[in-house]
Length: 360
Ligand SMILES: Nc1ncnc2c1ncn2[C@@H]1O[C@H](COP(=O)(O)OP(=O)(O)OP(=O)(O)O)[C@@H](O)[C@H]1O
Ligand SMILES: [Mg+2]
Image 1 (cartoon, helix red, strand yellow):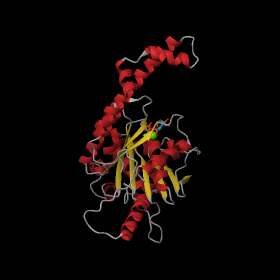
Image 2 (cartoon, rainbow, N blue to C red):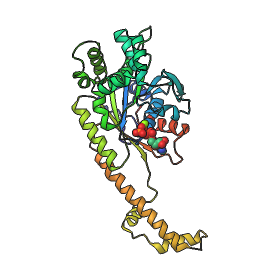
Image 3 (cartoon, rainbow, N blue to C red):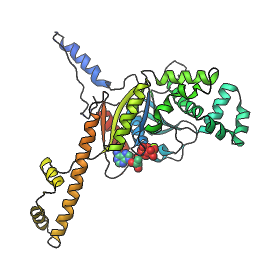
Image 4 (spheres, rainbow, N blue to C red):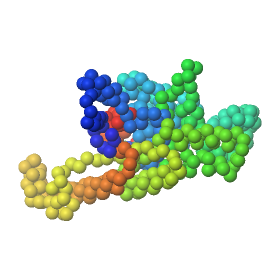
């Protein structure tokens, strides 16, 4: 699935006689919920700045929650992007239900406040609750996170991996999946590689142990890091570089999610002519006049031809960039540019599109 196809399930039965009942049974079970990420419980969403990480993470959370599941969407950069997207007041530091998914299912959100998380951390591991409060007043939290940025990242990734592992009394998981709206590609390898980050900071003790636990979640097959990109040179390059670096550090790579894809509005022949500047201006002028715009038809035709040339160049660029992604191993999903801008309805549409392509 993925790779931009419609997400149809494929079943290959090789040279054997199988009873129709058995085939139906297998097909029934396969098509019931055969997604690309069965077994993955931590989805980390990264990508170049502005490519749609927050939007795609939210859409993925909605997609994963559909059908009665419970998903936590975690924001680590303190920008309240999730609250804006779901049209809710700024999130306090706590897990709040922000949306109901298609066919039931809940999306909870958590905007991690680094200071609160650090205090919680000190309390949990060093029993330093009151000291933490005092530290906060003195601005020492800023100081600690500035001199030891690795500690800040361990706290952020630690919150997410704690939610991944958290269980109910009956032993079932509290969340079916956790989706993290993560830092951009340039920082992602360092951000997730908390072991290396704290290596110089703590060789033994609770921070070290904590980092080891976090790392064991992030490196496990329960995790996948997805890369959001636009079909433009820089975002694609960043995604390719990021996949390469992350792969080297042994962290599981997920999908490439092409966001804001435009569909061509001209046919292939017209696109070629527009790009080459050989569109038939007389014919366009004729068409404009036929549409009742007699006045200024030549000027309008020239403007349209320029627009068409721009569109053709853009389409060619998108095709080139898509070709650069073609050799990657994992699934690729494509999300359209929503012409009317993002709103809640659009977010649900993106979630449905992800489901149709097998992402959830
Ligand atoms: N498929 C889409 N169609 C239309 N608009 C989109 C789409 N995806 C994202 N956007 C818009 O693009 C802008 C950037 O999206 P978003 O904030 O999700 O990106 P980001 O990668 O999280 O950015 P940052 O690096 O600043 O955190 C937003 O205005 C968002 O509404
Ligand atoms: Mg964002």
